[in-house]
Image (cartoon, rainbow, N blue to C red; front, side):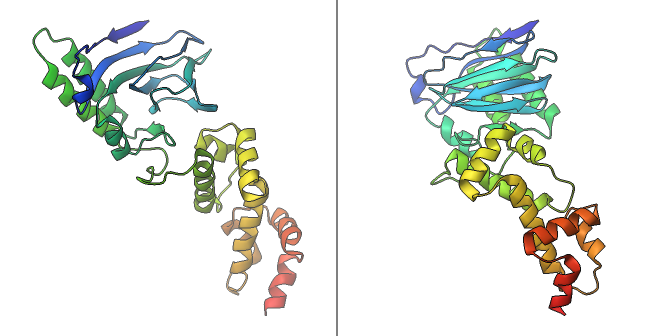
Length: 278
């Protein structure tokens, strides 16, 4: 089932405009439906209302679901496929303009950061609907459409990762490693799996492990263990904390596993290490 409203701007002055809408629409996809866009000099943004699917761009794969969206740049090698069991429904806009890329950067989107998440999905859905309604008007409605388009882009200002740096952007792999390290730092105190880190980055686990080891020198699993144990060793100076409490504070619910990992990394049991400090 498909619900589409199309706008086609054939103006010869399209590249002189700050922002210019070509197409917009909404579609409920059939299972495994695949689309390969041919954008030339235009940008394409999709926002997922329900269901799920996979977005492939320039050799990277993203598994996406409700309230997430993705950006495709002109000349990207990209395609996307609806899930076979729970195919997605999404809205999209295709646009360009001499300030289009600058506006995208202002809302935290760029070539190294093209996935976004909306905490206010209702507001974004309403923004799409307002744009669709403007497109269906019979009278001259260019200004209204542009107003709706600006409003819609403003509603996207909630990126999944930190905003792209305005200058000297990181290589995509470096960006993912940076985000992985930050995610570990913020979450090592709880039960954290490598799969969860990969899902946060929207990367295949094996691919994430490969680029992480290339950059850091160890696998994400080894890095997480070492990071937790280093944090635990620093806490050993606090005599008011029991070893069991320290174990919990660095993400180990099993004190025996903690003791085994501590000795593997430090070379001493937690108790022996603490005694050496006293």
